[in-house]
Every structure is written in C-alpha cells, then in structure tokens.
Length: 58
Image (cartoon, rainbow, N blue to C red; front, side, top):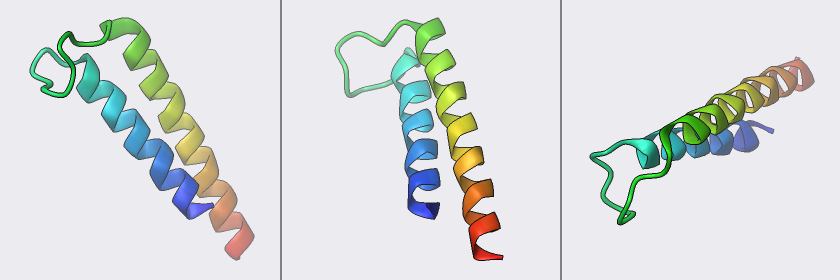
C-alpha cells in the first residue's frame, strides 16, 4: 500500500511537470487545467492510500 501511495504521488508530480511550459519530455506541454486536476486527484488518492497503509500497520 505504501508503494501505491508513493506511485500516485510520483504520477501527480509527473502530471504537474508535464503541464509546465519548461518540461522537456513532450514536444508540446499538456493542457494545464486537466493535468493539474488529474495531479490533485492523484495526490488525494496517494494520501488516502497512505492513511490506509498506516491504519493497516497499526
């Protein structure tokens, strides 16, 4: 579960970076609004996974 939380946070960071005009891995940056909304949702899922993992451990 902790791996899932970390993976979703990495996905959120990748989406934010992909929407940045300074990103280098795409020819054209992703549209900002959908990318940022997806990043926020991925971060929420990551926090939820972190909470579930901590609850499972204790």
